[in-house]
Amino acid sequence: MKVKAEQVRLLTVNEAAERLGVKPSTIRSWILKREKLEVVKVGRLVRITERSIEKLIDDNTIPPKEDR
Image (cartoon, rainbow, N blue to C red; front, side, top):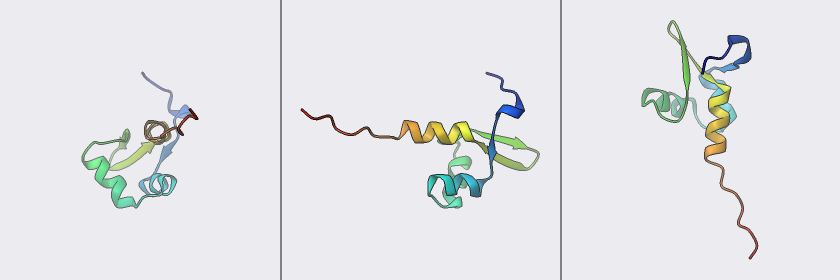
């Protein structure tokens, strides 16, 4: 799906790491392995989509146990 650029928030590696509470090297590793995150390359710059961060959080959220 194509999205207009003005609708997409792009984060730096450091911003994404801060948002997820991990080290920037972890984000770089995921990018190199093409794991977990969608990235946008603009020349040599690499940016992570905010949507990708939100999806990672949603996919790894474990709901609480229900009372039986």
